[in-house]
Length: 343
Image 1 (spheres, rainbow, N blue to C red):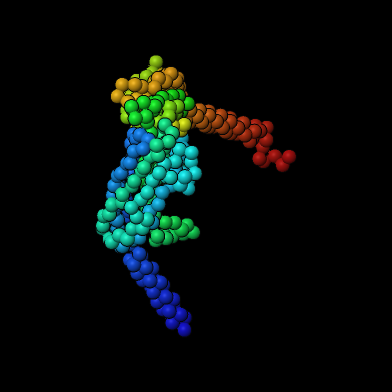
Image 2 (tube, rainbow, N blue to C red):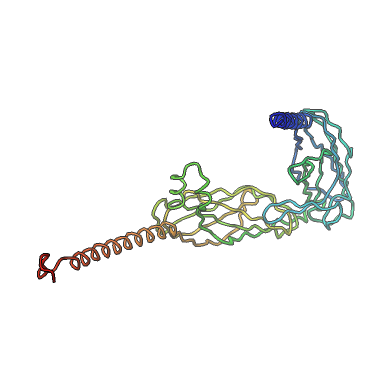
């Protein structure tokens, strides 16, 4: 009877596994893409702007996509937040139309959607934004989380006067801090190379310049190049380096934080970090130099702990040896005692 129950349980487990595999095979993962993912244009009031968006179904199953407009914002940490179309003051959604609202796409297929942006004659000078979202109707599940795959093409349109004036490129860059970072003990514990990770924890810091770039003009600008130069006044190791800045598009009245890490920093050093951010070919945003100091606290603490352990061991050892000699003298027999005396 017990053997029969075991066989039935095994059969049920195999059936469940087979069913799960079949369900996974029946519902392959959704993989979609859009190009371009970023649209930039300078327009004038009254202009009709058209562009094609290429949509790709890279998966092995047919999918249905809903196509719609939304507004969006970008945080200082570069996170994109979507909002209902037309809710932002500088939204281009009221001017825009799509050639379709639904796409039925076979496996490994490609489609195009036409975006029309008709700028009103009374449009305000400045940057107007728009997101074109493509969302799959197939709902995916990952444990307790249910979601729908989606991609978006983000548009930034600078509306200028017919003579090309009106748009102002202006920005500020500020180095908020320069931090010295070491890998954590958790990273050391989880590393496959424990000796190498311990060496990094003790001897190899990373210096990171945190630079905030703010757009104070009325149009978007692109960070096309830039770098942070780390220079040292004294150093136990490499004397300095230059780290390239990431490229970003920054919308008006928004801020982006650029993190530039020096991964080959010395063990001990004092120096400065100087950043230059270029938003066109010749103009850079000046940033004052920021000092930094590298002190190997992990190594110092480990050395102090080892010294304390050695000192403690020597003290304990000395006490033990001293105590043994004292007890030996106390246990020595008296020369006046006689084993044969009966006293």
